[in-house]
Image (cartoon, rainbow, N blue to C red; front, side, top):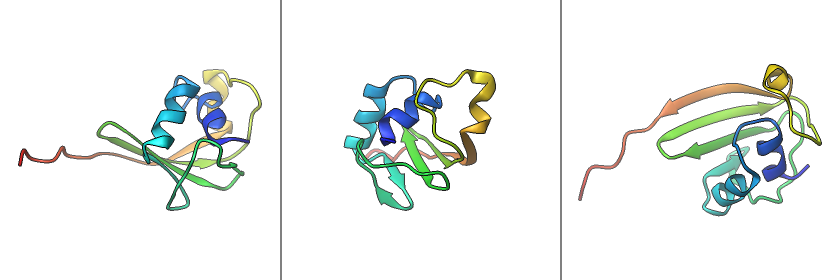
Length: 91
């Protein structure tokens, strides 16, 4: 399954276009490597997403071809780590 579709379907991001933009800007990594929106996601992969100053790492548990209800999202992705980074000081 495509990365952008997975991120949207399991509720990590709200829209697939946002997932695509984050990937295009280099803010998404799989296994430590920068990922493109079309990168194939497999169960067991670790996805690191940076949105603004928030960084979160997820483990892919299952894939879903359609949007997952909030009550079932824990079956598809597990939050491994989350942190808020400090903004750079003005230069």
